[in-house]
Image (cartoon, rainbow, N blue to C red; front, side):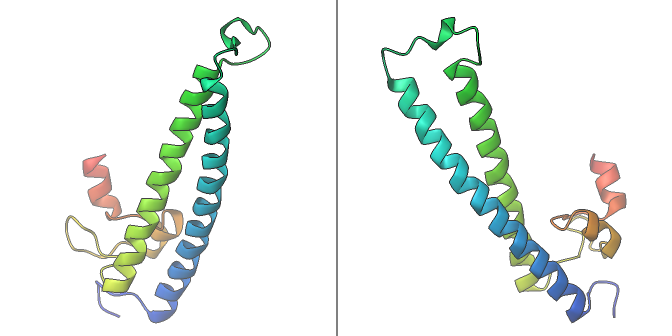
Length: 124
């Protein structure tokens, strides 16, 4: 194994893990899309006066929180898709900055990593 390649078994393991993460993110995305539809419908109801409800968050708060979570899930899904594309094109596990190998331990911790630990420290 050279400094810039991974074994087929390692690649297969990471690909499987990334595919599982993608399925999980897609499931959460679908769930939150449904919840967002409910909140959107509730917000459009002119008779709803949730600003004076002392029992819970307002629809505006709910919308803001759900929108932030939805954006996070979409970003996670995009990161996973890019990692799977790197596996497909042979660049997975190679630092996008310096070209050195990203350690398996780092990829185990963060399978979507694009930078080796040294470059991540410099850029972080």
